[in-house]
Image 1 (cartoon, rainbow, N blue to C red):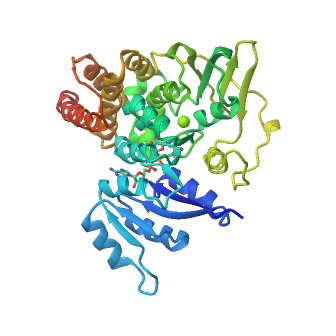
Image 2: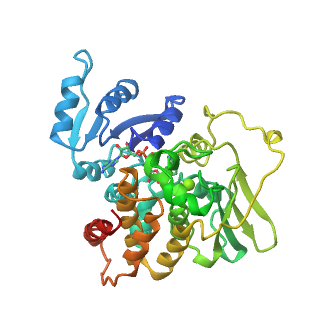
Length: 391
Ligand code: NAD
Ligand code: MG
């Protein structure tokens, strides 16, 4: 029998981390957690480590290391501790690792995902920001190294499941990403000024981290997903459509030239796409609740209202303009969302800040991952300055 797949899980303490560990725990004969990373929740990382027994833990700092060692139970062997962003990169390339699950949130996940791509690993990609900020470089690294890239973002996983391999481009009319519309899909547009972070994080169908929950409320998340789809499936923007589908039952669709539309349906549970990608090309049992289509008397679809979701429009514009603009979109959004979550700006200031950053003239050569990072940093600094006008 083949030995278990050795998994490196970046972002183990997050929402995707939880779902991934839940699937892995049900199949100890198939998967083994080799490494896990966390950024802030040291106690949670200890709890997870005692259950999943990784050989390596990656922590952000010496302080986190001290905290972990002081809390670690004396009767259990301490895993190897690696420190800092370089340790993420080093572990992504570790010869002991078969599969890297990229579930760090934001641009912080870029360097380790790129390292996994360069090292030719099997990559389960949740961190869509990596493709938004460095799609061309990332996909080139995947092609050159022969890495296997499997999307676990539910929409992209759905499309992946509906596409034949290899992809026959000329046969695809368009792909359709579905969007729940977020918690404010029925809120009067005039009232969006006053919505709170707690309301924005209360997603109607999915339970997710705070940043992606706000992105879902603005639909910037769908914009990032359009860009993610463009790179993953090598399709022009005109062939990537978005439909609001409040039930979140159809996770996305492929519309073929002969009029057939293939869709993937299921519960809104990330264990389903994660199971699919972990087991691909096979299938795995998981603990997601049973799906019963007879409970749905109707499934609704409608075009998104761009007055309500200006961030979606901004994402299409940025993608049209190119890599530099998608970095500006992503980095300025991260600054804006953080400020909104900390009650510094209004919900409706998020698209305003992004738009004002996209309007600036930037002249960057984005020809390396270092250049992406340097530019990301520059945009963050400028966005934080620009933010002052909204405070
Ligand atoms: P989360 O906030 O729940 O977890 C984020 C993880 O990243 C945590 O483990 C945290 O410790 C780690 N982290 C945060 N900042 C870091 C930094 N600077 N350096 C290193 N690690 C850091 O987020 P999530 O909802 O699990 O989302 C993770 C990624 O998956 C995001 O890119 C998101 O867009 C994507 N995604 C999430 C879902 C979902 O259902 N949650 C669905 C599709 C895609
Ligand atoms: Mg998604």
